[in-house]
Image 1 (cartoon, one colour):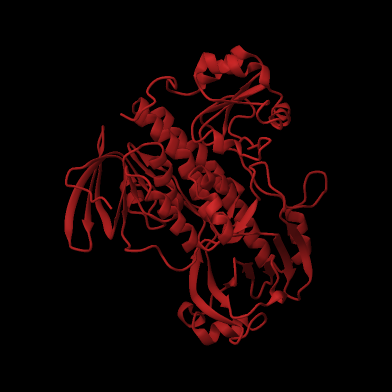
Image 2 (spheres, one colour):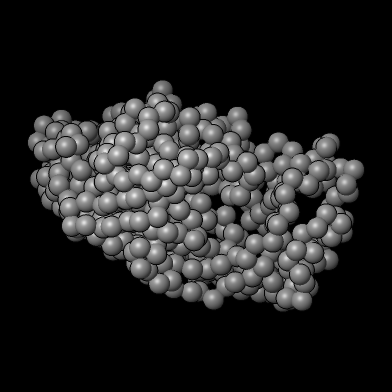
Length: 498
């Protein structure tokens, strides 16, 4: 492992090597950026925290080359059931068991230490990425042309100073980087204590089921989550009068788990009380400093979207940082990170809060059905795909993520056209668009199902960003080629990082 030398200069410094920081470092590393990652802990945390990710996030893991490696260690989530305190089924939310538009199943359960190990192993393949564990930043100066960072190596007390073009804080809810940005928090008003219990079964117990279950009991709301292998999680609401330390003790935990488990059937791996928050930073960047993940937003876990939102953050930010490293610093481009991501993150938080209130309600089935009733009176829950907020691009489809088809060999589009801009066009336009732009083109001849997706957009071609969101659409070669102007830099020049 390389060691950062005094006064080293990096393209990007990433503070924090959790799943969000490690994903960002991978995206930057595969794009050729010189990256330093500072992580205050010696090793990855050995206990699970996040337990769910979706198809959009799996698509990001595909880009960095770990999706297939994860498959033996994760499991497809069949869905969620809402039941009353008496065990009555109030609502069934099945998750599709076929692949979604992103060419992956919509909902996955995982063990976070397995994910972190895969992310770190991938980083080891990049000589341009340096990881320093047991190192904590304490002074950050955001200058006009660079960032100055001082950090302590907590193994030996040594103080070091490095510089970078950009710094991204993926350093969690108590983010140091957020403090240097001086960002206040927007409070959505949901703050509740819940006991989180992770257990490992000693033997199979099919009666627990494979579905996640929300127990909508006003006296003691709870959530059951089936993890991979023999891992199971319960999240149990803590009443205001209860002591956080006492309720997490083993005897109390087994009393609470009595409806489902006995000590003969499982071992408790971890029990702790957490306060679920609903917060969003009002400012996500300042000059060349940025925050992502829990540093930028915190959500109740009822949608399973906490980590997912952070992965979406860095998928949005990484390619914009790379574009600035290739083409020059561009505040207009970088400002779109917050304007695009913040409304998207808020949409998930607001939905999670609504679900949390429903789980806590004494009104049971009527409240659930009212909450999910659509304009035509039909009641169902579906996957949430909110568009980006205002930012890059133009047209009614701007800010929507484009689908990922497979070719006749079963190869996914993003495996053949990695993390760069991409035109998607009908076959007749393929050669001309490529000759006029020099940008990769995926066509309906290679991916026949693209015709279905293009027809759905009422277009013959689209320009996709590296994160596969739509910049714009067109119906003639001239209109499609002109979409390049929607990017605030000359994509045909400056391909290498300077």
